[in-house]
Amino acid sequence: MLRKTSRSWEKYRKSLACLGAGSSTGSKRPSYENIEPAVIVRGRGCRVWDADGNEYIDFRSGIGPVSLGYSNPRVNRAIKNQLKDGIVFGHPNPLEGEVAGILVRNIPCAEKVRFLKTGGEAVAACMKIARAATGRNRIVQCGYNGWLNTLSTGGFMPVGISSSQPLKGVPSQVAALHSTLPWGRAEEWEKMFAVHGSEIAAVVIASAYDEMSMGREFLPAVRDLTRKYGILMVMDEIVTGFRLAIGGAHEYFGIMPDMAVFGKGLANGMPVTVYAGRADLIDMAREIGISSTFGGETLSLAAVKATVEFYREHDVINRLWRTGKVFQDGINSLFSKHGFAAVLKGFPVCPRFIFRENGDRDEFFKNCYRRGVSFYNVPYVTYAHGRKDISETLKRVEMALRDTAGI
Ligand SMILES: Cc1ncc(COP(=O)(O)O)c(C=O)c1O
Image: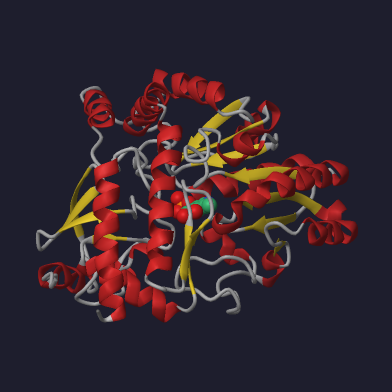
């Protein structure tokens, strides 16, 4: 089935003249020329439309933040109502304290919270607090924590950047204070801590999509080790928050970090992040100068409030798990049925496609686009993906697999 995407691509190519690298977000930049929708103009529920008018069942979900579906009426209403009264003010708006209270009641490790705008910024805030609180300088990262990963080699880098490339724009003295350890291998952490434990201010951990179940043993082991060495534990719940559980992996696995950061899922796409944790640590943010003009921006706070209420009233977490399981099982049986060497691995709320090689991924994704399904390495189901949408997706994916096999 041929879909014309020429208008989309024309707009994208035009944007390259003024927009650096064609997108401000590495992972949103289109790569399959004239096949992938290069620009998206509209979204509703679990569907998006490109500039040529093609409709796609979408699993990119804004690369994670859209957890209820595009243009959720309840969240939209909250934003519009707040818009009538203003966006930002020169003093705190009551919503800031009210939403802080809502999050403290919903996130296990949150004795206090503060707001920022991006995940990377929230992680940076926790690193600074941890250094101030411990008087130590070293930071250990695990997984992708935003573009701050570019402070050390060997870790997860933003899409399109090699983890082995020499660090550009980072003074070597700074790079020397940042290192990366692997998910799931507590023995390696213990070995590193035995040598450097007394220099480490914090570990920042993002759970690995395809091996998330290892968190059951790994996270308590790291919690014990960090306590032993006086290291602060920061959970990066930017993806896992509002997906595994409202409180993310630390709620799901029942551990108590010192701080945690939340972002995607929190406000159904509005730009807001939270750093949360022990009251003494979050209170320290002011005295060490963590501050942002837009931290208490009210449209996003109204969206957080509406989103949390919606989650509670509609048991969204349960639905994400249930829908995700039907989707994941369906995709994996199609892979087996068609002898396609790939697997959708991990927890159903944020699994990861694993392909034998990149070429297989490219062929599969391209054919899915051609059949009107928009995937990302981590396909995110939302509250808006109903049973019918999933069965329609599976039918389209089956056609895409036949296309891939040339039958
Ligand atoms: C686990 C995780 N942490 C942090 C970030 C960074 O968030 P942001 O892109 O808002 O800076 C991301 C972004 O994808 C992420 O997936």
